[in-house]
Length: 207
Image 1 (cartoon, rainbow, N blue to C red):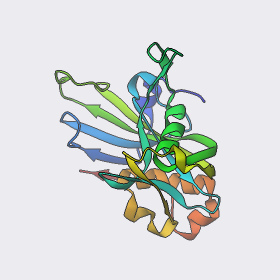
Image 2 (image 1 turned 90 degrees about the vertical axis):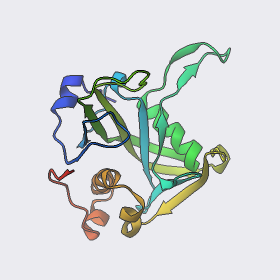
Image 3 (image 1 turned 120 degrees about the horizontal axis):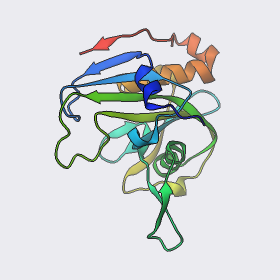
Image 4 (image 1 turned 60 degrees about the horizontal axis):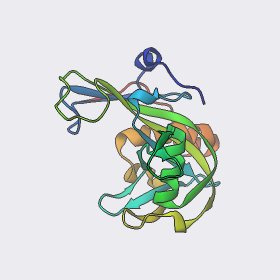
């Protein structure tokens, strides 16, 4: 997979914008951008997967605390055989595949970059803030499910997979996730996407 430079990341056009998200230092702006390249690792601590069955249903996870949502989470360190020494951090793609397994029992036959949430904050970095600043991203991938292995699911975090049909996807996904979902559908299942009216987005600001 190819990686964006920070300059390329900043220059990507937005298809959806939200201002002053509560969980980021304010003022801030979060944009949804579509890209077949991956965000620079130093500004991208997390990765998510929109995994689809062969018939176009999307597989979410049933989070114990938050309910149905896209599978994803932080990039983890890869440890040496001693279980202590860090060899390297996971790539975003590795993290997305692992999270799909741990949260929904998904084993993928394919995975490709979809896009990301790109965040910029105008605030001074808060003391103890552990995320990239002022630019940060949340990387999303799309993929096709090969099979399920529910033994992989971490039951203390998630109840397992939630399989959602296209007509129900908007009800289960947040506004930003749904923008990426529609692009994934248009890419992987163009006829099904057209049937459900999933068209490409123009820039739409959301205060």
